[in-house]
Amino acid sequence: MRPAASPAAHVRLRADNSYTIPAGNAGTPAQAFPAQGPFLVTARETRDLLGWTAGIGVEQRVGAHLRLGLEARYSDYGSKTFDLADATQSNAGPAAPAPFTAVTGEGAYPGPTRVRLTAASLAVRATFAF
Image 1: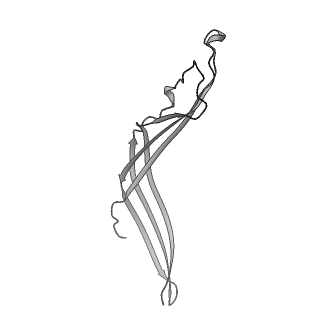
Image 2: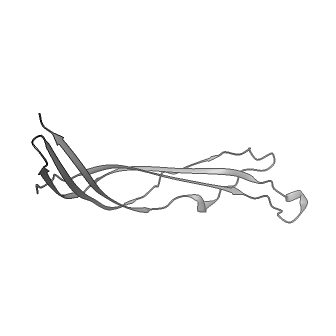
């Protein structure tokens, strides 16, 4: 078994959400407002994560020119919190007709999101030597 260098991962997290405000009546038919949206909310964040890797492997000769090997590796990059603070919102539906203005909802924005990243791999190798 050989020690591996600390692995690094470049992580891009994207959060998408959409919502529609249904039509309603604010008391009288003259105050009724049309449905609005769908509104699309997108947030992105990129971070570099450092972690560790452990692995083991075996190799066996199977004849004069052939070797077979088996390797297993596990990497753990830990967990990080992505803030997703720079969200943008757009209206993908028709614009609200006059005299109405678009209403936005506060519940559609992503908040801090905890991400844990691990990877496990198993490889089979065949080596042919001349």
